[in-house]
Length: 286
Image 1: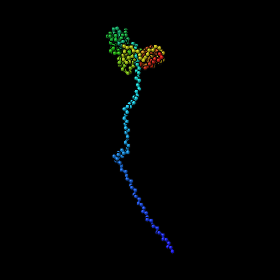
Image 2: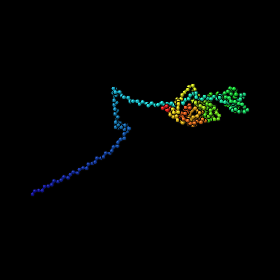
Image 3: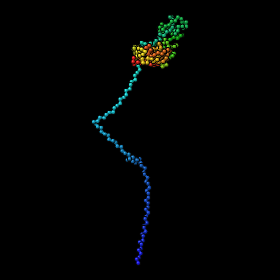
Image 4: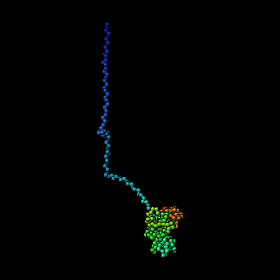
């Protein structure tokens, strides 16, 4: 008999060793940079700007200059000529020596009125002639003093705060006092009177040696020669000027009536410097 085969014994596998896990490294803290380190780090990451090379100008090419803008000319303002008048038409200052006083032929005093005390048969004389004849001011009625004869260029100040060149000006109501022309002109509370022509002395004594034709007032030959000849203005026979309104500070006490500008100019009136009425304008077709 054949012997049965014997089976080979199976080898027992060797146990596999379990790998030991490697320890996880602890995170290392980043050191805080010092100021020097920060500057070095910033310089290392900041790009250095590249300067473009400047080209050498071509000597054969002439650069075209930029045009300089011309300044816009400023028009000079045209001065408005001052109105003037023929010096022959300006009334003269009335001398204070022409003031009238009263006295008798054999009296020793001159008086402010025809009746004073027991005086009778008195007549009117000028102050200058009375003083020249040796008379003095009455101590009772107190007329104008002979000292006023020493005032140079005397004017007459009325109660309405106007000064006049004539003591007989019709716009004077009541009594008046004396002042020199310069003092009256410099007093801001006083105004020159238009009725007697004191307006012509507002800038001082007028120059009577030269005849000046008004620059702003062309000759008017008819009422149709002005473009604004129908403009309404106000005049008076007692006033040398025409005015803007029926009342003007320069014509106090004067009654002004309306008229057209052309008519006023034909009558020889000039513009009032106080109220500034319309200026005459010539018609271009005239």
